Length: 180
Image (cartoon, rainbow, N blue to C red; front, side):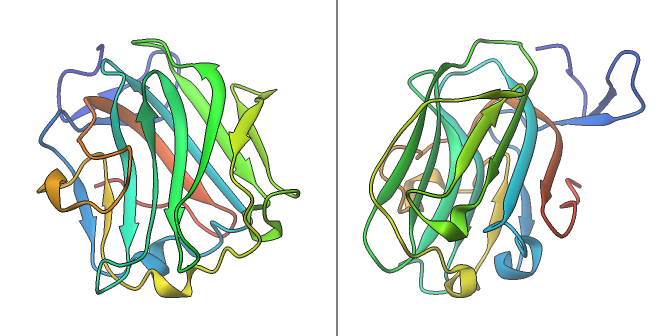
């Protein structure tokens, strides 16, 4: 992985990337505030040297509901339980090591038939479970980016470990989430 320090400037770009390693993470107290607009659009730019782990994880205060994005078995996965049971969106694009990915998911608020997922500007075919509700109001707990202090406490089904990752940006339709 090219970004071996806490902050590395990406070549020919003024965008900084932040290296999280397998034990690093950024933590916010109210996921709902940071994720405002994620039901309309979420964009993440990252590269990794592991093929399994968490890019971001948001939870309710009682940890019963969550929203997470990560990589599992070389596939991008969006996994959530917002009160209606486990739902997963799995991209049919293989994530390769040490390659920058620009991931954009739009229209989660429209549910199963209305969202789209792009990886590096190309529409990604997805496997998903039918969902109609996507209400972030329950995510009033913590937001973790790049990992989690205790991955065994994570409620997610597949994404239960930190990811050795560089992240250069995470944005919703309304704001950019500060990485440090």
